[in-house]
Length: 296
Image (cartoon, rainbow, N blue to C red; front, side, top):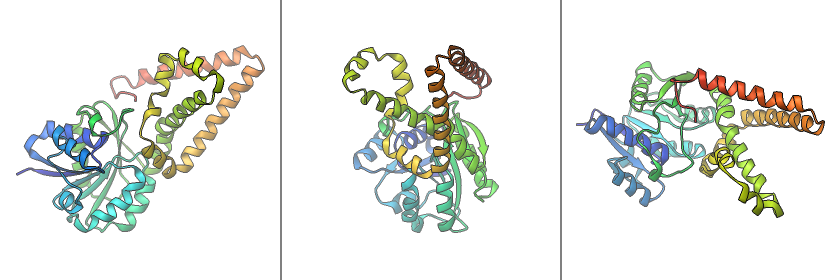
């Protein structure tokens, strides 16, 4: 008999990677059920060993689950939990991989009974590829994994989720919900918007676009890599973390405005200082975080 039953809702890149890792670490001590959007994905998840069983039937997937891991786009999480609730057993823990936390918690606290718990989580990892085919058992290793502690779940539920996360090799950190959403907008959300903006800039180069493509090298590829991420996921993130994202985009807009002014004025020293300070700060961040976790 397995000591833990886990249901993964959305066995894609993140959900699939979690399943692969926990099966590798726990073997027969864990039984994993999964649900995906398509039968093809569910078959692939079973074939890869990310789950033991997959079904489109919510009762079959969650009825015995001790832990339910939501790994869908954020706007799908609340409707999904509503559809699952009739089949979730008392004492089960719901956790998630959503990149925004306040929106999900605001909805869940209105519908969850007292004997079903929610612990908000966010693994700070990913790839530009999506789907269970892109899953890797070491995707979480040395990455930051945020557990939000202000959702009213009991200490033993927190410890259970934290112990599972530790098995992935991720580095746990705790933040309150509001700070998480602000910090995620700076570290993750704005870079994705900016990477997509750089690709859009190339697309709008019109007569120069083909010539620009001939010049594109590693720098363009590196800075725009995350623009290849899942569009559904990122649209949902922007819709569910509006205020922090808009505030940070306005700050970024102001920074770019300053650079425009420096260049227009021919102020080489100001431009030099802009790049030098940025390099100094980035190098300091890399040194400060060496051995703690890998930056994504």
